[in-house]
Image 1: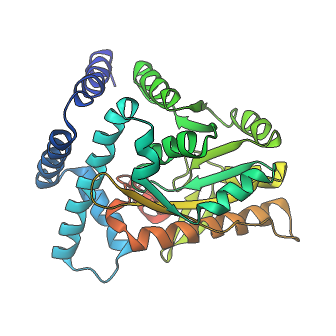
Image 2: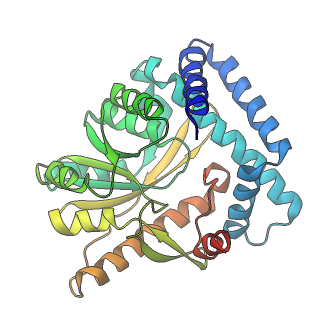
Length: 301
């Protein structure tokens, strides 16, 4: 991406953050839906990839059902963006009312244990809104990792945005964040990681909807190294502005096996929890990139 394009991309996101947050909520919702429908009708690469991914999640779906599902998926994806642009200006009291997580007592009890907690989430609904709920409703700040975006100014915008919601944001940079995450957990802290797509070469191969995919080893390794509680969580949208979700039971460290074997078993358990949530609400899974290994190998050929 050249400097001119970098500046354009950063400017567009800046316009979104500056403009959308000033819109009345119904207007922002309607705008997001119009943008989503326009992108869906164009049938670009991202929409086609989303449809291809959804075909694995709903294998019995015919072409028409997949098209409708991808349309709902694009609307969900744009809802994420419209909400994200508006989140810093929303009253914190709303987070407790707008976000409802089933079995959130599992998270509260894990935090009370003092062991530290790793929450692993897929790209479902709005994970930033869930984070705002945790910092405001439970009253626990947490640490997360963000993919380093280009241009650098865009990455800085994302960091500032998430920090305004009470998050500590570390750059995903070749594993250097791992030590900081481990220290936070050893002090009884909360770490939240979006973990359904591996961004490194050290991911763990899992069975995901019947085919091989690679997911990050980080959540399982952190739990093993620090003794932290590993909790998968899944989210889904209801009618605006509600978002729902579930805290899944702890993924425990196996009592036997090598470190690699334990990591493989634990990451598979996380993937299984993700698959449960995604299968129940496929339209809210914002996976517009290649994920499965055979899709990645096809691109490499």
